[in-house]
Image 1 (cartoon, rainbow, N blue to C red):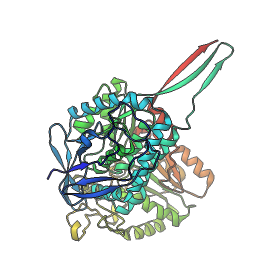
Image 2: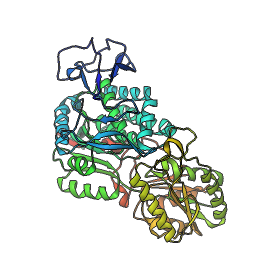
Image 3: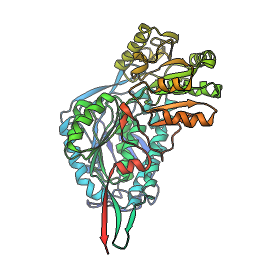
Image 4: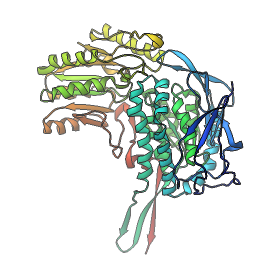
Length: 550
């Protein structure tokens, strides 16, 4: 059955205007009417927030998402409206925990991307000419609305991606909120440079938004990474054509509704769903999209670099990782074991920062392995909707089979399975879901394929080392260089090893502790460019020097 959302805006029936105005909300609640008369209340925006003074076209548009348990259709968000792809074709969207289709997502292509680009171009003069405070207010309203509906977003993220709902509740959705809040306030405190050239001239710099930019994010941390890209782009004054993975489109689609309610002008953010080779390629190849921010595989990153490089687009590529975790004998062993288990298996190991190669000093190797394996065996595998489940489902059947093939490869390469090593059996509604037991291998060389290629799943290897030099050598032996972890109570060693590791980020005695002010990105095959803090705002702007002669 076709479903619609109708916005009740009786006090906002004003003539259409071409720019955003500041207005007080003349009503207390909005309702989403879905299907046959059922209503869900939308949280009230606080008085003083900027809002659209003209209602959405025809005062209603197709729903982006619906209640769970029905066969839903997830549409594109273009020019402030939810629309089907021009072809009206759909992609099956699976719930990983059950292995069953639960919705359909728009199968878009270059024609839909062109519509989004046209909308973004039209919106750019409006959005870029707004003051930083005006853009900040809208972005803060978006953050507040997500926060008020945190549980709804967490449930959707878990259903779509397979991760435990508790994890989406405490990590994914709060981080998305933080992304909007951070960049909304960061733009209120930016600085520029001025240089006096003796008594001849004064030089000062300006930073201007690029125009229309493309943001492409992956399936492992859907809203977390989607907002990590679009928030700085929007804050800097750009308009955005964005693509979320076709395997995890739901929370990105939900975000469009939030942006409309918060008062974001139509066309500022456009969300196109579909396959990478159709939608992603169209974004990368479009001549009017000035920059590409991408997170995903190194192979796709190579394609983007080859395609966008000759077009002189700005590129930020956050690619794969095969991250080392170095455990020295002088560490706090209890903490190192506990956090190494977390670093290996959080989000089913589907995080580019996971420490999948653990190197342990020989004098504590046996003790570490014993404690590590014992804790891994205690990890609960099960229905992501149950809070006791520590490990959820992998995102797709194809990805599950890829990880299982790597487990077979590790056995062929001489690895010993300490625990796990096969598809997990989960009963009840998740009997056909895509679960793999957390798997620990020992006895593998640091040069084997298992230790060189990105698996991106719940598989970890533990390898002993004798000296600090050997540990650093093995850690740096892959083509990747995204992140690394070091466990030691020796401050000199911490500084020394951190400087020697070929990684974009090094955590010492911690993991996944992030300060949004710091730069983030990899070296070698893990990418180019930096995200985070002022680096992200610099990426999404062009610098201009003005020289005034005396």
